Image (cartoon, rainbow, N blue to C red; front, side):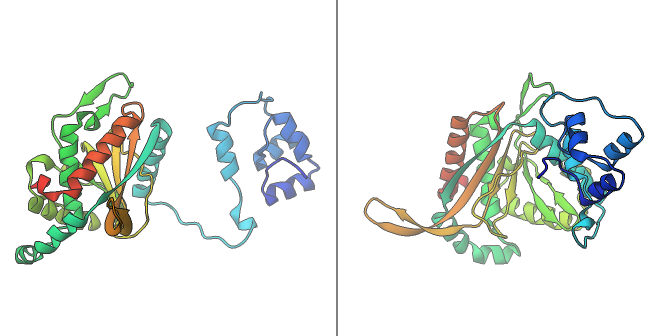
Length: 301
């Protein structure tokens, strides 16, 4: 057995030319060997030996640089420019932000009863009063009550910028990739206005008709997977924001009311936050506050 990692084609190339991959790996101070390492050895050169250290970005890239077709049929699909930009942004966020995810849930019995009671009015308005509209309104209220969550950390990490406006980003899964349009002034808008704006922004995001001024600058973002499924996830913080709220599908679960278990519709809540700005206790308080607002929709009227 060998500890050296190399693709079958690299092993074949080394074998044809009499290069011992184990010896080469020891000489280079690495366990991952690429074709250019073999070629460099054959040409009489070699990279300087490296002391044991944490893997570098180049080392990780070498782990990925394998010929997948050597293992079986594969199709290569170039990423779109939009997907490349999005991927780079998410990778940078994940690498730079020490993120933690706190999980909670909210009882939506009263919320769903209220939505059912408003179906007639919603139909008359030609729209739907979605649960997401309640979450946007509740989040706007929570950001007012916990201003540290409606903030951004300066690029040098030395200054916290507290925002005095409340804009909520809505992650939209579109065919061309993820878009995050923003509901501006969510703290000043009612539920019907928010619901109508969410529907409009989502439709135009799908059609790639959002204007530049309708994206960016949010205080916090909501990523809603409730229409797809799942019981929880860890959304990636969308910089320069310091937190993001994830929603998944409501489930009916038994809840102890002090005397017996009763079925209750509960929505999972997942709050990812930048630990440089927000501590765990504040995250727990913030999400519990959001849950209380959702559980009593009268607070949002």
